[in-house]
Length: 380
Image 1 (tube, helix red, strand yellow):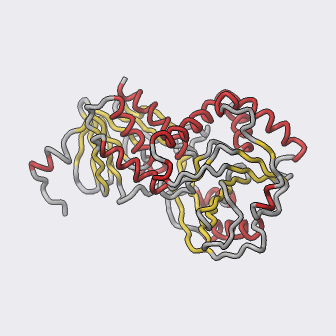
Image 2: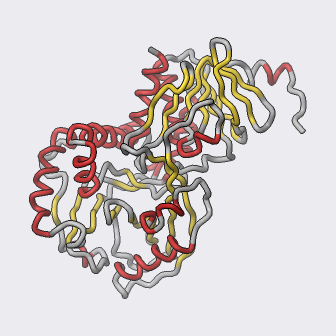
Image 3: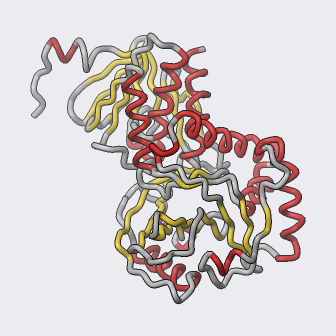
């Protein structure tokens, strides 16, 4: 039973706000920071349902990436070159912003480079040179190099990988510590005057007079002039009177035991990004295989499944050199948000309620830049 609130609480923690952000993950934190940096006097509060963000922000693989070659080729075909380049530039700028904003050692930023492993049935080997040349020409104005991607098949064996036909390398990608990134952003937001309240679940968010009223599971009512929903795949769990076009996608992950003399170093993708792995110190972190059971993985449930976990374990057995010995020590999952057009959804669903969601698996890179766009739209 909720106790009556005091006058002190009413005039401090629960006072009317200029902006309330629902969701304290990467999108919510970057948005709060961008708002205050644009207008220092704004009263901004983040309401987070869980003790820590529990969608994808602290449950991902810790990649600072802007798109593997096959992903970019697919996007160019589906979205058109211009749209593909626009979203890729935002990802690239987002990674740059992270490294300029937060000391690299604070988030264990490792500029290890990225790789895409290729099999002949996925991308014909005799087309790789032309595909790389095509992408490098398009990306040069964004990355500042004429050789964003290079083919480096010889590195497969030195990295301890097998049963791939080709390897494309990108020296501009990195790994980082997702939990420490969120902690760093929380610290920065609080230092700017943002209030973060955890354990507050918003159930209803409706236009009220000239602002917005938010009802919560805790029977607390908040008011704000404007609200930003940064709730990603969970957005339709909040009643707004609107249906938000976002589809959940679960990303399951396994983590190995420490491996002596592990040759693998870098961030890796395969099968248009449906498999992704990296070294985490001397362990291997592997995620994905969602395409093995799309319907089953279109859920906001965080439980792992035998289908995907088995697929991930089989992938390691197939593609790691047999001299590499390990056990699986940890398993978890996160929930991503997807749109039909693979572009972020940034729209006012009501005059004072803006949804900023669905980075389509690229939240680490995109949220710093999407947040700037959100702040501009709210403040204008």
